[in-house]
Length: 391
Image 1 (cartoon, rainbow, N blue to C red):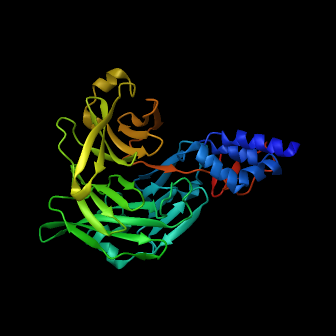
Image 2 (cartoon, rainbow, N blue to C red):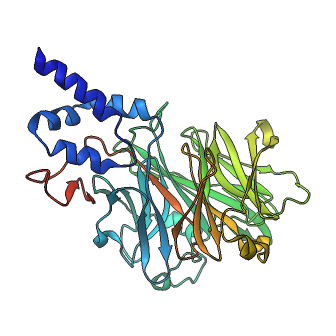
């Protein structure tokens, strides 16, 4: 009876450990068999995720020229440095998965769980070439600007809350542009891990619409993917279930400048624009037949970002949004002073990287239950979880 009461008390304590500090869970699991038994229990993992709600941001992925994909931790989780491959670029990250692309391989796509180090190779399909690359491109000299489509990875499980969907079926959606006899077409196809096949390519005529290949994508539910145009004045909706494409025109917002698609918040598309040293956030709810309802979400003062005098000397073109961590409300902002995060709930601003990164892909995932080799005692300096480490 006493042991059961102690276990129940420790379960409550462990449940309240910060989700963005998985090191604390790993160290607790290394103390004794009893604690590891509690933390390895699937019931604890479900309760832990339900208590914390949104998955924590463990870090973010980005690409560097001639260096491939890189992972920058924002928590105590560390990805092995051996996974930073020069020949492999990251295209997207969502629902605990990262989508990587290495055009020189027979199976160029990889979908990876960074915590468990589980990889799923996706074979190339000849019909995808018309979406992915311009004719005559040298794939051996691939960089971020070589693809003429945007790629999205997403969970394919019906009615999933995305708290623990990694390991299940997923989709990889490609949406791109093609010019055919001066008519601009938007093309799309999707890969299903359940069938192991790419769908037939569908298209829609969209004059003047060109996909922003370096922009971010957004997902509503688990069947609608949104990709922004290069001009930023519209988005294309790809309905995976119904295999339909449509273009949603964004109204002109006078004086607010270029709108960047950030992601989804509360089921609505979220856009951001920097103007006069303020970050304007607008939400757009997609309606039937391309209709869209717009509303200003909020305005964030950016004066605390760099020193005030330096900020006054900057133009709006010197700062723009490059990423958004959904459900935790963290926006990544590129500035001449490096990469910063803006926390929408608290207004706190943090500098997270010295370099000016063009596109940030946050990696969100719980680390519960992914225990690998454990240290012999709590005095060990490094603990292992799946394919990553905690330091």
